[in-house]
Image (cartoon, rainbow, N blue to C red; front, top):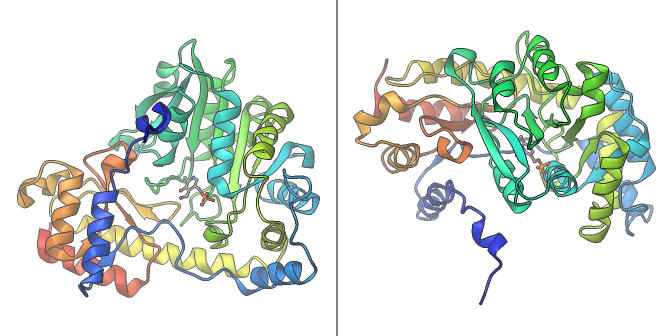
Length: 393
Ligand SMILES: Cc1ncc(COP(=O)(O)O)c(C=O)c1O
């Protein structure tokens, strides 16, 4: 069977080997603690489920009309972006998508041509380089440095810009980094792209999951110029624990949104209508359940950060957003007789029965990702086991 060049170039997930092994061990009855999850461990809040059930019962089971999203959902998105992010979008500037992932893919498809360059700060979310590759465009990776908490600086972005730069991908709070850019850092980056013909994909999936005194600024809110250059991406997935619903959204300049809607209408026809009613309730309804989840994540973030930094050979920046810790574990490689993040993760899985995600999947081989979207009891158990294996600092 001949497969396309396109799919042959797509990377196999570097995390696959470790997660397949963890699954096999679990099947054998081994008690594996998994820090791999990329989704909240809470059910979708009851009032959101009720809204989708009511929509089903009211007969909202046909194609979404238009495919780009029902008006109520676009209006709820505009209200959210205004209320929480100080952004003034019209419903015609909004697309409702099959999760955040479809929105990002449609954006790549709508604006990238072969050999266009996309500035991609590392550590990066795994799907960005693959989506860029599917468009035959090129990722220009810019690595965040430890002395800046793994965030990239405006100067680093300025250095990476060429005549071929078409897009900057900006993800704050970060998966996998767990860091959040401060409003000043966002403004500085907005300044360096301001006089260029560059679009900024601002992935704000975790905008509500921020901790301690961290402040969040939407990229598009940095300046009027930033507003004109940005696509703002978000979803019900992380804030409202709606990962399986597949409801996301993106807002931005109307010509780009229209182009994305055109591709959507010829591919997925958008997301299920009754799920869009769930999104409307999530955005317009009671925000307390989401806040309770956030508080729980915050407590776990603090605990995990402290325990990781107490391990020999491990250094971890304090998470300020999302639900991930992304420690540098290279100081523990020698102790386990390994030299990269895949072998490190395999060793920790075999010997401590703890599943981690190798940092190489996110462009940084000295790191591993631990999700704290799992119970405090599991977090404690997993970190106790890692402490036994690696020793105390
Ligand atoms: C940074 C980031 N962007 C986008 C997505 C995609 O979200 P969704 O599940 O809504 O497609 C994820 C999910 O893991 C993510 O972490």
